[in-house]
Image 1 (tube, one colour):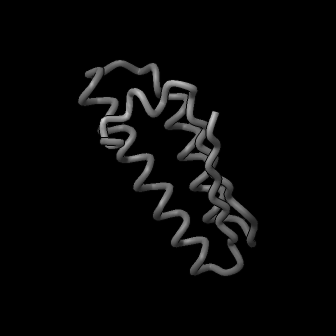
Image 2 (tube, helix red, strand yellow):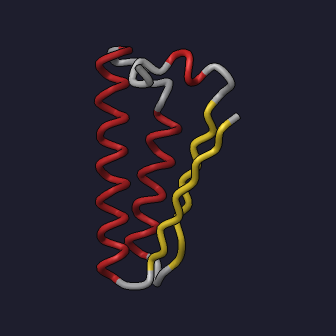
Image 3 (cartoon, one colour):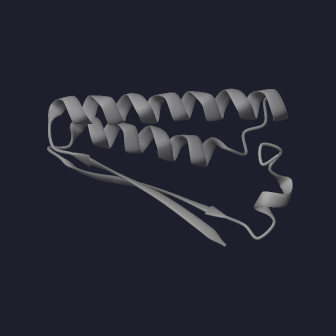
Length: 84
């Protein structure tokens, strides 16, 4: 299984606003994608709520670190149509 990680250090208000904007965009995109694929289903609400909570915490916090991890399953390359 492949693992990819990005760590974002938040050392200033500008950093916090940038990361908050990134999380907001990700939240919005996930919501849109789920809506297109599944209609009005609410099965992703916990995930979307978690991203919203994380975004609010970043905006309030005095600094910190956000780490995003992607763990690819064993058949990820076989199902990724971008691998050519």
